[in-house]
Length: 346
Image (tube, rainbow, N blue to C red; front, side, top):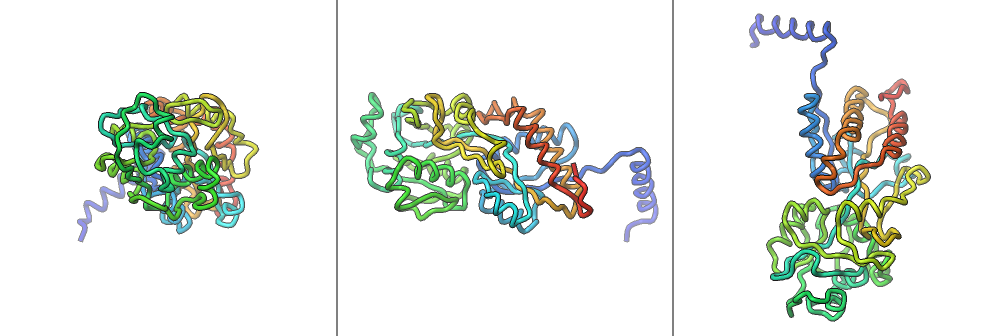
């Protein structure tokens, strides 16, 4: 039994807090895409220090995030595959982009460092189709002059879970390879013709780091964190580009956020000599009718703070922050998130 004196003291503290206008910090919860996890974790740490409010994010993949927000077991979901306007309306949800970045092919090849291998979309598709089986294949050698390519089998690594990173990767391959589009197609999960599966960007990065001769695809922050060698890519306009913030920004430059229903912009295979071809945004999903409007407001406060204070943190991890005009558009759409009486929560 709790001592009466302790209860009395707790009551006094609560009363004092209410009289002073002080609110107890309420942690918020989200789940989904592994693509943005490094920056969400960084923002959450800084936000907790600035405000006292924690943000607990489960990096479980876009498919898991969509399931959890539909089930209302978290306050927001995150997906790198945007939902269609029809699906959003059916589920009573809205979405907004929170961060942009790039998916990069990574490899583990002794004596071959980052950027020494260049791939086209067609060659990358043929590797994942199992048509190109060895690293010294003429198609790779032609694009990568000077690289010491061994007569070694290519070990393909892909995602095993429902993944927005996989959506971006397969969406891109479907745009550049008729064979890929006809045989495999695009989605958060596909029937892979070859290779082994890792869970999350973390799992793919771990496999590529351990398996000699392997190739995989991960969000760029994971390539950097795990010191994995990345391939350069031939883009839509024939330019050979390396993954970095500038090439991700170039891909995002022409995005029509205002004119796309649900802001569901897909940034793969964008034109421009400097554009990284497998770029994308990560989206936040929230219910438009909130059972707990106070907590929903805390979620929006977190993202408002991150948009205002998180650009340098994003740049340090080579993500691309949402431009100021897009942030203004996003915040105008937050009025669609309402309480039971129909009043906007933010």
